[in-house]
Image (tube, rainbow, N blue to C red):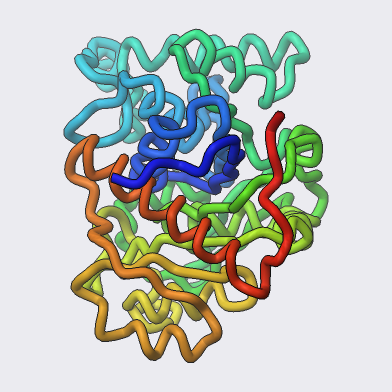
Length: 329
């Protein structure tokens, strides 16, 4: 297992279960030298609660309390609230566990008191023992909207209620143009690298990049930006990434992922089974590292995180990055 470079501060972009898993591996190696910027395009208001699914998944995972089977929600959850809600004829399509409700109630109450989403995220992470810094991409509302067959569908309606069962014609990030990149991001120390976790490129990472200034900030850092492909062997490990890529006429492969991030990412980590694509990806001007990217265990998360850090260290030695990595001291 590869150890992190001493004194490196790493920034990761993440959302969803796959992103949370790699963020967890990075957190194990880096602790408070890791900042995870999390997608909030999935956020919505439901039953009077402000719900932040990706923030919760990353927080629960790094806090060691996530449901180990499904990857989201809390371990040992009970469902009395949902059972009673369904009995009353309420909207029971979006499942809220009894203990998970406390998170949403706490967040909603604090926001009504005037706290920012960033402040609430820090509070929740601290309560669960998370030592890495978790930041929402923006404190302003950005909402992912799916356009399908002339319909505009709110993201959670598409993802949960419709189970991704309609074709995607276009994806919109409503509110993004007026949103401001989280001010805390600009105050971060210059990292040694940025790692884009194996999250859905279209649903978890693109909302972050849609916030004005996000892309220019990332490129302006002047450090390696590495993406880990969420597509392995032509399929998504979890979620609708492959289906969306097909519907948007993108190659459903690690090559398609690389093309999506062309101009932003300097390197990509692909799975061993996709090694044959390495030359084509390199032709896009992107460095390639081949690793086992399927994370079935905690050890897998840490191993992949270490490989990403080693990849970043190698890229830092290339002529394109002839400056020393920034220190967090």
